[in-house]
Length: 122
Image (cartoon, rainbow, N blue to C red; front, side, top):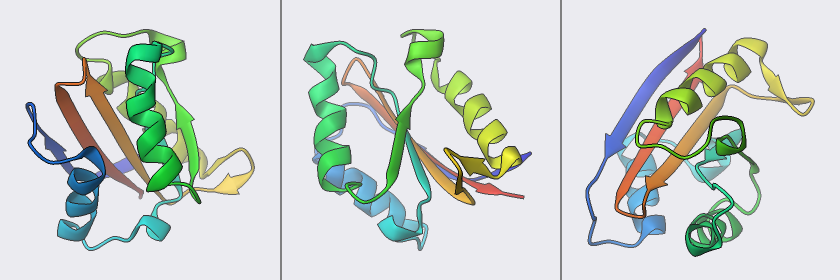
């Protein structure tokens, strides 16, 4: 269905989220424009959603962005659900009638445990 190309998990990183994601992309030789879809862990909680908006409005302002927690809720291992969603999008090959070959998942549970996953179509 999909290939997990790379992932990183962190605990209370010292650097800004945008820096963390940029470093992750650079380590994996992919540019922001090389990402077809960004899936975030935005959950509707205004205390946390600004964190995600800041990232998507600045770093991924030209990318297609969606969320997943409206379908599964907030819990420590919700990233597993996001991986399932992402795999199905890549299997389908499109999202909102736009082709998707590479996607990035970004989640930050309780704003302390950020994780970044890069997936590619098979």
